[in-house]
Image (cartoon, rainbow over all chains, first blue to last red; front, side, top):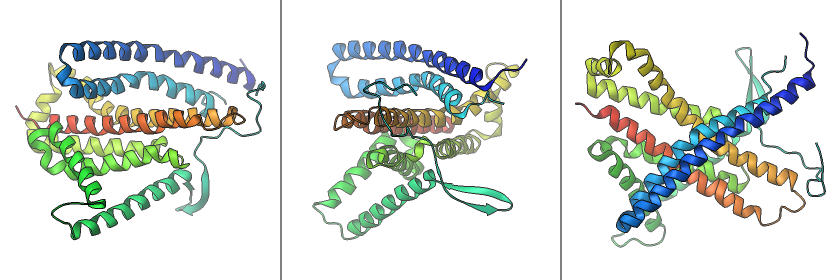
Length: 84
Length: 239
């Protein structure tokens, strides 16, 4: 079956939009990490520096999956791999 | 492109890598891109800084003042970071980790000065990831010997080896993609703001610059170095 290029571009845009939904997971994960860090600081205010750096490190690692979704969206929109 | 009142613009949205000029090498067309130029600028800045720093430290005084303070602060901070993460393994890695830390940091925040950050090009971050990969496996073979490496691969069962291998290969890919995608997302966001809202983009994008360039860039630099150190000291521990 033959598709014209505009159809493929439109579907790529929809796919890009769907791919960015991957951002939900890291959002929830980072929120949980920040919440637990806040609880930890409440329990032991002396360790605030250590807790903050550990939290930021964990959040940055958790962010990766969301960024993969973003990368897929970018590839679909700007590299256009599906076009013949 | 649909244009509302706010979005009316003649400006092109532009965040891709551009070729500056091309030349022939062994029958292949090779492009010098904006990334090369930006890496060169970053390298130039770092070289000038280090030459000046070296000259200052040659006539160092007992009580530091002025520029000597700054240099000592930077070196001490990086040393402490490596020392507190790697413990007794830190000796050989202070130079390397410090170097990539400064390079990635300056690359990430070069977006502030109107450059396209070199780390927003996968061609820059993949070699950094591969360097980490090489270091991990060199140290693994050096400290755990071949028997230890094979034992590590066959953990927990021998038929688990392919999955462990995929896990090993995923390390440099995820390291480099993380850095690349973070910086790229910042670059794209700033390009969208300047391109689509060019009429009202006055002064307030500075806030976004602080977040995307300074905060995000610094965090990602820290994360890259931290993970590199963790993986290397993991590889260096023998049972």
